Image 1: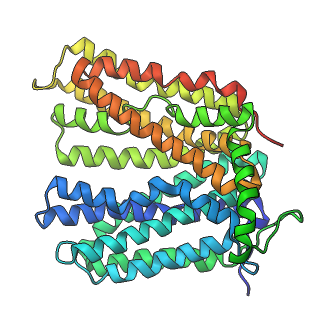
Image 2 (image 1 turned 90 degrees about the horizontal axis):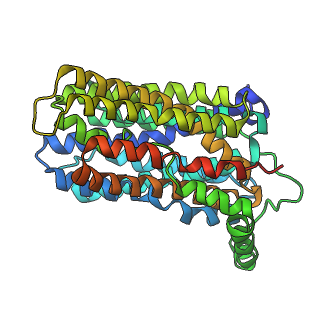
Image 3 (image 1 turned 120 degrees about the vertical axis):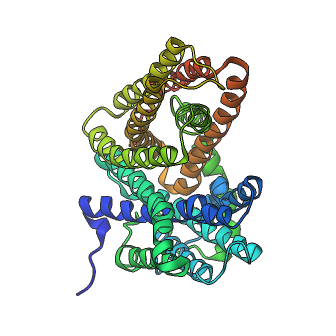
Length: 423
């Protein structure tokens, strides 16, 4: 019996994008948690591990470079996006299998090269899947589907990281890597292979290498027009480069404060796992809810709510009068953990709605390029937020930084009224 084309139904589309994004989370979790832990146990230092992870995950920072290739080059038989997804997933499996027999500490160079190529394949798949979402999802299902996508990615990070690490103790690294490869292969053959894209008649399906040179100039004009040619385009770029919302409890400041408050590694690890699980659940719930509410109004509400955990922690820090180097009162540790959990639970709500807004303003003919640009600017906002918050903590302390972060995170509210979806 042939497998169904999941893109043909609403439930099928949402399930397909959830599973494809799950495979994208696997390489990130595998590198950041499983491989980093194995390296540390064999004596690698923090600086060495940090450099290893930076190189292994570098392909995700350059997704905008892959967009034009995904938009311009298409297989006449496999489809404009499906062909790229199938190829990327096949390479993900092929680069994983040698990792099963290599030891990160003993064969550091080959292991790094293969992990880099594995993440490059995952990043290319991500660009193609996002472009497929732009051209496939219906307007009334974008937020829910986006929430499911990032819920799947969060689950993939958990499985590729903590899940693989648990399996290493039971069946070894080779067995754990083999199971990861089987998961990707199952999604590839059971979900992507039976898919059939609906391509508008006006869209050229056959674009081989010979035709690319003649199309580049016209494509670049379309891409630049989509990114810079209207008030909506500029509003989209500005919204992407502004912070998602309050950011301090998401990454750097949270990790530093956890150590300064005296949390053990077990407490930090448990808090991180619980936070990731909460984000995965609320990505799905938030997407479902956002499809039933006015999208921009829902997103504005989530942005305001996301500033509250940081403000609550700021007040707790000021009330306790605590400073780094002092023993943290138990009430302050409890307030910190509650704020982090609340923040990550609310963060899931915002992501599906935010991505749905970007899908709504993206032009299908340059979908991979335009959407990848929005995601690249979003990554840039995370980077500069980490930089300024680190300096602010040194100069003004944790409480003041949390307050400024909550204020800066609301800047996107000024742009939201201009982000009206395309028809």
